[in-house]
Amino acid sequence: MSYNPAHRFKPGRLFITCIDAENIRGRADNNEDTLTPHLLFTGIDLPIQQSRIGKRKGYSVAFGKEVVSFDIANPEQLLVDGDISLIVQLRDGLKGLIAQCNASITEVLLTSGVETARSLSVLTPGDTSTNSTVNLAFAFVEANPGLLKLDLSTFKNCVENSSK
Image 1 (tube, rainbow, N blue to C red):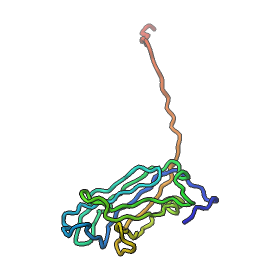
Image 2 (cartoon, rainbow, N blue to C red):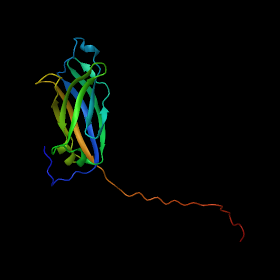
Image 3 (cartoon, one colour):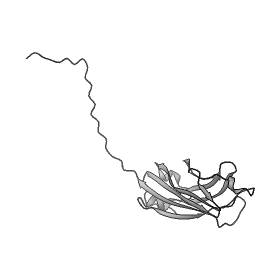
Image 4 (cartoon, rainbow, N blue to C red):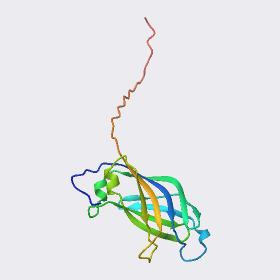
């Protein structure tokens, strides 16, 4: 989705629910049981966030609906060519990158409070097509700035007056 200047981005928190990955091949060797797959997320001016290691069963990986989040203070700074995208990588602790894709999150940031499930095709380095997918759910919650009022008082040398 390309950004329409009529829409206004607001600061808030992006939540990503890591569901599973399907049809994931092992990389480099045939000993697939040694893989320790996890998801890594990053983007322009965003810190790296990663999931815990998923449970592998055959060619699938379950992530137990773990949630990772990003605080996004100024969404307009993340725009590149009218879009905000997130890099999603499936990685292994020993072998590194298994597969990756770019996911547009522009629409998610413009629809606060709505969870959007997506099945993303991920490519193994060197491949041009794939049937490997990562299933995620995205949600964005706008920040609600509020007012905090504190009354601070300092008392020095207070002496009780007991004469009446």
